[in-house]
Length: 615
Image (cartoon, rainbow, N blue to C red; front, top):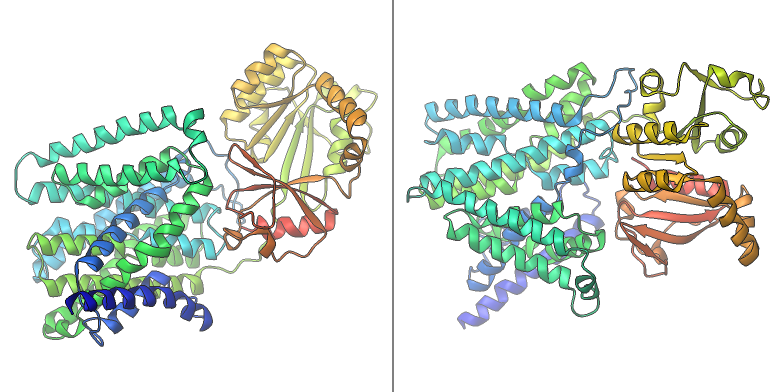
């Protein structure tokens, strides 16, 4: 009979996890994150509601695995390229230069931590909690699981303000996770456990170098498909191993899982593997965990402690104050609505508060009722903060982002090409020196920008550093390569330079710079004319040429080409995914950051770019 109840409870939880997103979609309740809805559903079927779910070994095990996998995906969500300072600076619509995203985010998080520490002392003095440091971690944490979907839905993930918000959440996630592990090792009995944490990170560093060494090994690549799926097996082995090491050194298992996610993110896995892991985590284990959080939460017992009821609005206010005060640092660049909206979305907190509450209860630092109250506050914050953010964040007119192409060196190739490219899709400019003014092919029909010299000092005084693509075609190949290397270092997305010398061409390739030469271009065109003359016609025809479109719109992530709603006159030729080149079929899934090589009329391609590159 006990076994029957166990199976029945498992079935109920699985069915609820299955029905929640369907109900949200059918009722068009898009302002509540799915994870929050799962907790609310757990409240209804658990101790606070009908109490039809009985805890047992199966549910406890699956719920724990769900929490571990959630922490792993939180680590995997961290995009370390966002920490790079090699990014070109744009100007905001108000004319001010964009702030450095990483520096700004670091300053804001430092402010959040300081304000949280002050507020924690207040809570200790009032008598709500005994440990200042634990309370500081609870107030300063931010939920990546709420921030990331909200930014994606608003199509602002790739904007400067979106990157700042994301980086604040990432730094908060990383810092509070590590500090929570240190807190546990110091306060959970046994001396010297803090030093043992170093062992966990040493193991992580070793595994990172091993993974980087064998990641692209041909033997490993051959085992990555079919029924073997060695990449997926390696990820799960890594998670379990680091969880085991984490527990062995006296830290929480979630630290090991989080570290596993960070390592996988650093190794830059292909998007297909990430998609598989997301599908498994958010499709099975993680929903069970969130439903069980709601099941275990007994709201009615909280009413027995009137003081705890006062704690709810006070803690919500503390969460908001701890984020709003530091984000006012951004007022130097952004308007009040944008700043306040950013403060609200950063107030959302969920998984790490649940972790801190669970750990605090286990260590006897907070009561079960207080733990339940912390989780309830986290749920409330995750419900209302995305709603307020969407209401407050300025609904600016979304404009199609033109690709800025700058040509350095005016000649018979770059000038007509600049005119041909100039359209709703491209914004072109040609730069030349005073000496080139006397060239016979330069006429008033072309709009040119003058440089005092072909040097980085002169370039820094122009808008070339704001370009997406820079093409360097001066008459001196050494200057071409020198400028290309400097521009590549400055963070230009693509640098293309003309190099006829094979030795210089090899240097350019080694530096990640694209190059072309008259000899290579002529040979390639002649071969195409001989072997496939119709292909050359595609390139020459302005209405049916090939285009490179990057998928940035999250609503198409995971969608198959068969289900793709775009009905325009466009054909998918290739999909470039990392180092992979994929021939598209009806069942081929599109993933974020895919580069789609398409052909079709310019009108339809521009419409497609509008849809896919919207951000």
